[in-house]
Amino acid sequence: MTSTTNPQRTRYLAALSLFVFILLWHGIASWLATPVLPEPIKVAEVMWSEIYHGDLLHHLGMTLFRLTLSFIIAMILGSALGILLGRTPTIDHFFDNWLIIFLNIPALVTIILCYVWFGLSEVAAILAVVVNKLPNVIVTLREGAKSLDKDLLEMAQSYRLSRKKILTQVIWPQLHPYFMAAARSGIALIWKIVLVVELLGRSDGMGFQLHLFFQLFDVASILAYTLAFITVIQVIEISVLKPLDHYGRRWQR
Amino acid sequence: MTEISLAIEQKKFPKSSQPQSENIIADLNLNIHSGEFVCLIGPSGCGKTTLLNLVAGLDENYQGTITFGAPHNDCRIGYVFQNPRLLPWRTVRENIELVLPLYTPDHTVDELLASMKLTAVQDNYPQRLSLGMSRRVALVRAFAINPDILLMDEPFVSLDAPTARKIRKQLITLWDQQQHTVLFVTHDLREAITLADRLIFLSNSPMTIVRDVKVTVPRAQRFNENQIEQFKNQLLSQYPDINHLL
Picture 1 (cartoon, each protein chain N blue to C red):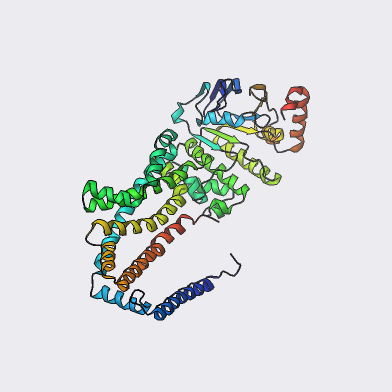
Picture 2 (cartoon, each protein chain N blue to C red):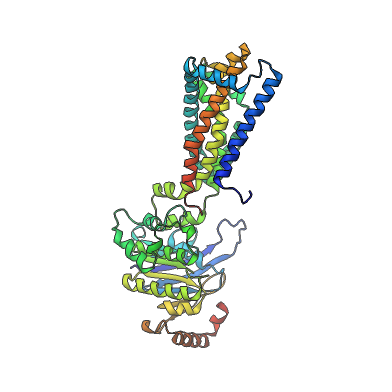
């Protein structure tokens, strides 16, 4: 990083790079002049009309609902299991192979198996996403729980702090960076999986719509949906994850 | 205020894979009276910290008994570790309040912070403090619970001399008011003479008691350098065997 990173300059650079990206897109699209690569303005028009006259908000909402629910389940369950494995070596050694197996099962396989075993239902869809994300959260939180500061734990023990205090005041703040890492990579991973889940076995949501547009060769709509979704994810990142991360680091120099 | 009796037959290294691993502590018997200030002096690495951890209940893997005047669970232990061990995500005040029982009145902490001249930094996070300040916060934390037993593991090591002297005075003032039983580990004989009622000299591993000496310098004279030096020289000539422990 150079020494000239004042916030105004950074913001200016970010805006410039976005502008160049759109300009480049527009240039290539108008040069090729093909329906499979519409210009940015065309995509914006489609997005606008889909929001106001189409079903974009409904499908986006369904996808966000699945994303949120599976994210919350995966984070809570994964954190609990990760801490358990990180703190008890016997259980960790026992389940280590299981984790490696689950980490390496392709997402598509879990999705197909969930649908085959549990039917084309909402529960199967959510379950498939959770199973895909869970091992990731467990591994990250396990590393965090393994590297807990022994000095601080001894301090807590010698002062006879309650279990609740030890968990919330001594252990959790040390796990916070690991939790945030799992959360951030989690959202990025989960939303991609949710789309595949919807494509394969749901009748609404982004994935279902994209499949429909693919069959119609409607690239403008595909890009419009993508754009809408990226925007929503960015808003979540900036309004929820970044402040949470910042709050967790407030004590650092 | 609680007496402590230690009778440790042996303490081996934890998790040592060798069956005949060496003892760290062997046949150590020590009775400490209620309200007594005892300094443990010995070469570094001889097992003094291990001994404090046994007393604190952090390590239960030893043969022998440690008994307190009060039942173990009723006995409040304040432990000042070699490094301050403050939670970096809690402010100075929050660090102290963490170890206090619920509904402790604010003025307890206020007075202790003031006595250690920490009032101005009470809302700072520990990473913004100097080492000397952090050590003082750790002291306040130990005093704040009004402990029956105070364990201190070289709490002033790596502080500059004037700061260390100042904190030693504050420590004695607070101890005068509260009269806890203190176990203080050091390898600085002058520091030990300044603070203690009684000096316990410990040998290298396996650690055991070599000498048990009362400090006869009156409390009022403890911050007089000449008196301390005089007592130290007298001690070394009287017990030449402690020379190699320092």
